[in-house]
Image 1 (cartoon, one colour):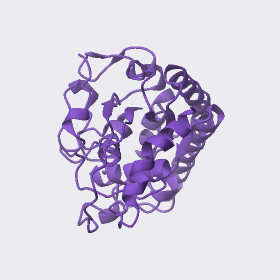
Image 2: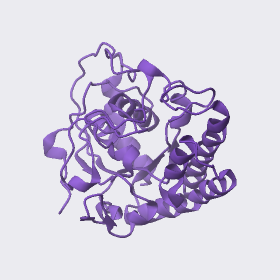
Image 3: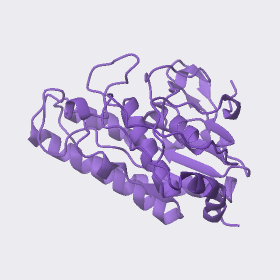
Length: 310
């Protein structure tokens, strides 16, 4: 049985349970959520593994997991919402802030100086579903984009070339995942808009002329992720399109935090909890063809959560 067919069979019960029920969409802001409907609880047999960097881990959103603490991984990141809404049988999240694609294959030194195991160690022959959201830290792309936003000279040509190189790294990563888990369905998750594609605002603090090239490079990065996913036969989840109008300048509709560190809310220029809900909703819809029953917080069954080894 192929990975896609296996996942489709595992998710059939979810689709049946959703028939005839209203589904809430992802919240546009931190305000009121859509009215929720009570659905019959369905527990799938999906073994889910989440790989990624800080845009998957969710640094400083609410409560941080401590397995390990140095990854700054939130209990309310999009993998946690997805695990909750899919009612997975097991949920292993090894996403880690500051991770690059090389950290899939080798131990990673975290912010606190301790070491995390290679993320691919979490993927086994029993894994049914893998999400991977990374690539922005390779070649220091996102760090350079933030510096460009700060008004520093922006090496547009070099950053564009580096963004294009990420495609090969993502293709290699997906193929390694497929080798470790031949029957798994793999979803490469793109980055949402962080900065406005047009105009500017006080939260950014630079002119639209400065931001234009930065937005173009971010678009090149997402295009690279999609090319890598497609080349390896994985599915791509496009967050760029659905996040338009939810960038840092969108005020109450923003899915991302501004330039200030806000403990409990998010790291600078990173998704807030409403952004994580939105990403999870898009991934869920891509997987199932249905809209999720949106919840305010992620609450996967504690018995399904696999804690990372120290």
